[in-house]
Image (cartoon, rainbow, N blue to C red; front, top):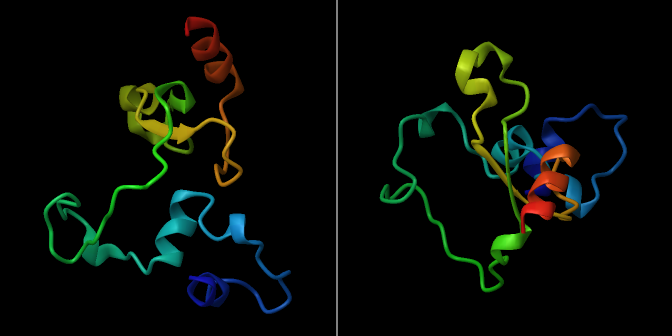
Length: 107
């Protein structure tokens, strides 16, 4: 992972910390060598993809559901709650503090 991510960086860049390897969708794709050949793949059933459940699943209260970021071109879909992340996880690239407050008061 570190080699794949480092190959995408400029030579003068500081070494990556562990939490920086996959903190964002593009970085995750670089770290796991996910390219356009995976487009249209069914991640749940395709044999080219291997996924395992975590032994430490977060509780429902830790899951944040927010609008995606950087997709303003998506029209009405840009504001749909299609982004999910674990509250407080330092690997999350951008947190939505407003949504986190709203969801915390709703619990």
